[in-house]
Image (tube, rainbow, N blue to C red; front, side, top):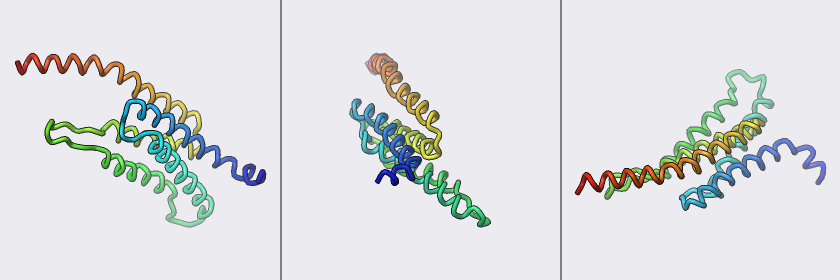
Length: 159
């Protein structure tokens, strides 16, 4: 068993880091009662890391084959997450509002963090996670008074 961890330690670290960073982002989303929480963000990040690890293994295995491009896997992660994000966007007819854009963007950046972890860019993944949390937390603090001000302005115009 010890040999398993020694032999596979590199990709275990990549997957665990990706999952952990996704869970941290998801925890913030859960605390503010958003649809995609810890499990979703952890799976998106870890899934992206897994596909990057697979693409690296394939690059090694098929290095001599012409026309093989392992970067296609990475580019398709971005496209696939776009579809997942699109599914989280809801248009509310009654208020003509679009909801879920931040959730979609959060899933997209979480996939990027997973990709960074999968490539072994640990510092980049951690810094990106901190910046995402800053956007979510700081912008939430700043947006509340702005929304209140905007709502007050709208009410005055309607009256």
